[in-house]
Length: 229
Image 1 (cartoon, rainbow, N blue to C red):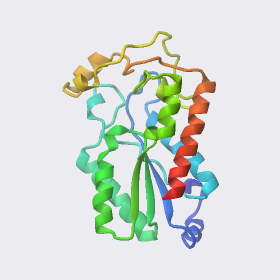
Image 2 (cartoon, rainbow, N blue to C red):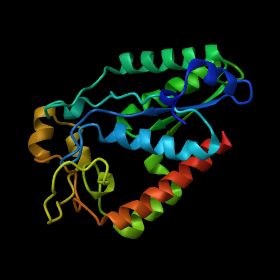
Image 3 (spheres, rainbow, N blue to C red):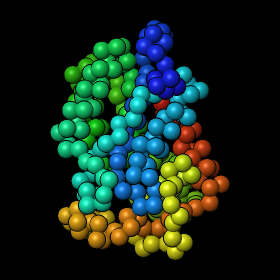
C-alpha cells in the first residue's frame, strides 16, 4: 500500500502492529527508447504490487541516483555520492524516528550501490534496526527467467522494456554488446559516442506476453524477500 494513499493517522495505526516499510530507489537517466524515469517507474510499481497483499507501506521512490557516466545524454540527472548517501541517511533517520525498524531499500539502479554500504554503517549506529538494499533485477529466480528468454541484454535493451515505461518504437535488429569495462574509462561525452542510442546491447524489445511473465516472477520474488525481512 502506498503512503500516498494514506494519511498520517492510518500510518500510525499500522505502526502499532508492524514496523516494516519499503523505499524504492530509482534514477533519472537515459534508457534508450524507454522513459527517462524507467528505474523509478519500475521500482515503484514493483514495490506496490509486491507489498499490496502484505499490507506493508511503500514510500515515494527516490527519483534521482548516482549516474555520472550518462550525463552527456539530455535529461540524465546525477547526485554526488556524498549527497546520495546523506539523503539515504536522512530518510532512514526519519523512518526510524517514527518506529519503523525493518526497512527494504528496493533498488532499480546499479549506481545506487553506495546505499548498501550506508545501510550497514547506519545499522551499526542503530542497534535493533534492519535495513536491506535489494537489487530487484538480481534475484535468482528473475535472473533465470531472463536467461530463459534471452541470455543477451543489458541497460536500455529488452530487459528494461515493459509496456508501462516504453516511450517509442524500437529498432528491430539487435545491437552488439558494448564493452562495459571500456566505458568505465570514458568521459560522459565518450560514453554517449560509444553507446549511440543508449542501448548497451541486445534486442530492443520482446513480446509483451513474455515481459509480463518475467514481471510476475519479479513481483513474486520481491514479495518473498520483503515478507522475510
